[in-house]
Length: 294
Image 1: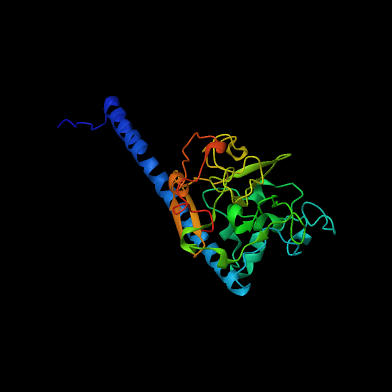
Image 2 (image 1 turned 90 degrees about the vertical axis):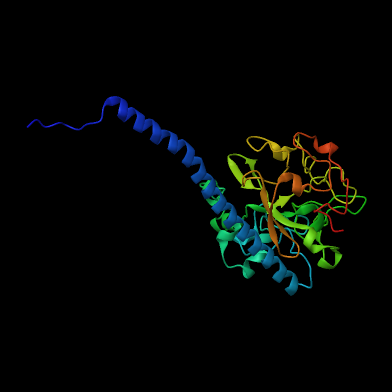
């Protein structure tokens, strides 16, 4: 009796390999999207926790938003820009330190879609480890949570109170609709120079350059293709706002709720579009604008 040897021919093997390659090409992006969706959901949860921490802070401090910078020596003496003096109240201890007692979880300051934290990116630099831990990858609504403009002059985020140039935090009583005012959002990684990178701890409003009631603290603080925050690989025309989650970003509001918003939704009430110049962005409907105190 003859025995027939069963084996695959070369063509059959190549066909099987091709089918596997095609399936991999189809499924790998699906898996990647699923992973990013999970990271985006985790990030959304973090913004929710930050929002709730802010609400608790407001409850404890008579409804006043935490200072953007503080002289509190909680992190490495509270010093970064230099030793505070009577003429230079400047420090790198930011608003996150004020919210920390209500959170007790440093990882909530870091978006899982970002990858390496500031602590890793600044390895070997002069930053204290706790300083890096407390630096969030989210930014506060700088233009409207602080009195950045009084009609005659601008106030800067570089200084801590009681410096004369420090912006004073607002009270929640000044907010007309907390559920429709941005508190904080995903922010971009920016180059500080000298090989040091950090995430912006503020988010400029879309119409910061042209809004009559906000101070364009930086010449490029608003949204638009020509802003300084839109350089490198971050050309999204969204200023410091980072649409890193499938084309959008997570945003927390002043009533404590959080949601994912596309750049267009975050810029509601303006004429913003991708590619527009920052100097051309205008508020077109104050009732749907999500950044001011009205």
